[in-house]
Length: 290
Image (tube, rainbow, N blue to C red; front, side, top):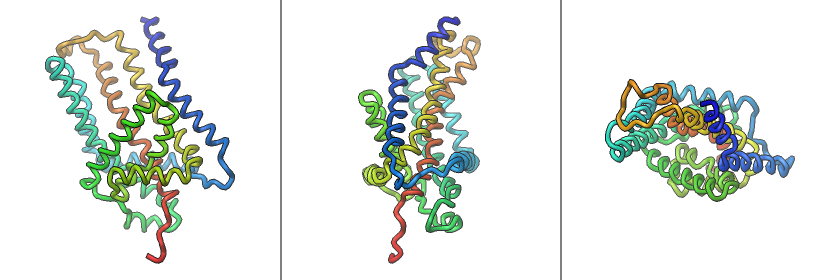
């Protein structure tokens, strides 16, 4: 058992794609630091950003706690459904539950963007915190649900393909599309507009955004990796079951599987406040003549 544990641990630590991913993020980050000019406008505001991100996420969870509860329940049911029926049907039911949880996770993302506007309002150069609180350009969730879902799917597909075949370009795409979901929530952009404008905005401040965003991305990306690895470390001790049997099913294994499924949503939520922070820092100033 100890040998199997060590083999699984070594497999994760030296996994080909994981190592390439982390190396690519660090490579782009180091290159960005090397070519950064003194005239580049810094994006970061130090530890206040992390504090604001934590505050934004906690406020969003508190504001939409019922939605968060449903996400947890649906994620748990998705894992439990694998043992309800025969393999094909149970897999289909499990996928349906996961899709429903993913759609609800967009509501949490929207709420985090809303709370981030309030937490980071002091970074705005042309509005006070009260002004932003009263006139925030946040669009209603019902109007942003479909484009937000499609943008997330497109970005996820592009980045997945990029990480499999072209690691460093995938990291660059991750930076270029960092503001796409935020633009959908705040400006009501459609699918293609949000992707295009995100590229245009980040390209103008690419170096400081890399120096700010990539370390956060690296830390956040470790969350699903670590949870997935923890699950794999216990698989050798879990027999494959065709029918759910509480007497044989290992409860900690089941909980770890649920946490692993939730990890993707968690990383998606945790990165949102930093994307809002970038948007508030680099968004165009309003035209005083309008």
